[in-house]
Length: 464
Image 1 (cartoon, rainbow, N blue to C red):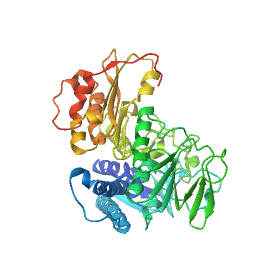
Image 2: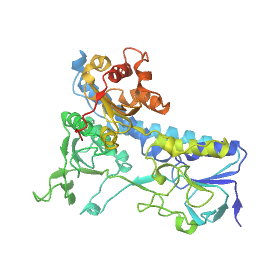
Image 3: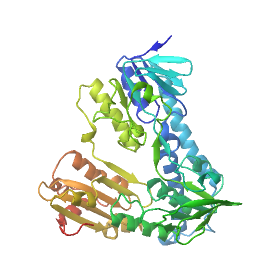
Image 4: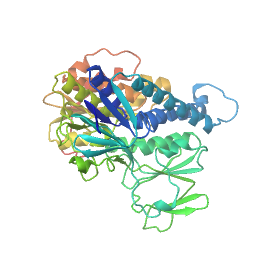
């Protein structure tokens, strides 16, 4: 016999628990199904543990630079990797327990642990139990992609998940991939004492960003002793007694990097393959992402998809915003949609990259008349005072509407200072609003009015 609920939520990641909270507060009986760990990627293998490692690595980096600040330390900087990892695991455990306690105390919620599979459009099986509901929300997240590279199954490779379980600092970590997760882990483990080589198939790091961002970040990483191998057009692996040889270029033949550990950071896949979506008639794209419309509805009435599994955002904050959109539309009578979301994110290298809106290349491809401005961090007082002058901040704006189209800060506090521009774009206000603001001194954000004031017409022949 089936059990009837008002709503079923599959997955207890970033969007699932708050939606359960809103639905139960509205008087609904809700079943929340989680097959593994409450909290999803962010809490367990993503933002929280990795940014905790970033913090430990930064302390080690600053300790090595102590003399630059007139501070004398006794002896070399040592790394207790067990303590570093335990600190990250403690942050994760505490966060996961907090979410679990919240859910277990939620009136009207039934929390189930197990694999959910659709039997039909509105019937879900969890073990021996059959659940039915007129509203079903899928929030199953994603996992690391493991492409069929030659020899990859012959080695003990790491992913963003398993690397968090290391009990020793790698002798030589080969990071396969040159995007966001790859670069964060590369810098973390370099600062913790490992030799690190980044292997990227394309011609530059983080190829979705502008070329000046890629070039500057590569300079930062190489300045810390990280080897970067781009144009690695023939990646393959050969198991060895102490790790793996990594081939990076067919033209030169033979292995190119002798590594003790290999991290695969080559993108993500949605956890949708074992949900029985075909039984429910729910459409997915060629990569397995659930197809949704602007309001996160699937092609099956009464079924929605949130978070990483819908392919409409790959961040904790976009997943949470998916929840906000659904709650507003279903419970508050709002008309919210994905088209209203301004894309913003950060890369947590040190210095971090804060990004919002279009890149320069995207803005130029739009054919609009543009204004551009760029300022090196060496001319930012806060950066100079902190002895961290690498990077730059820049804007691109529409010359006719005076709306900022995009911005980037690769520099100290860039992940925080970007929010002034993010808020301005959300408010649909002209850039003069930012120019005549009176930001606090000394901060990184205080330079935004100066950057706005230096906006100049873009060269129409410059396609970079």
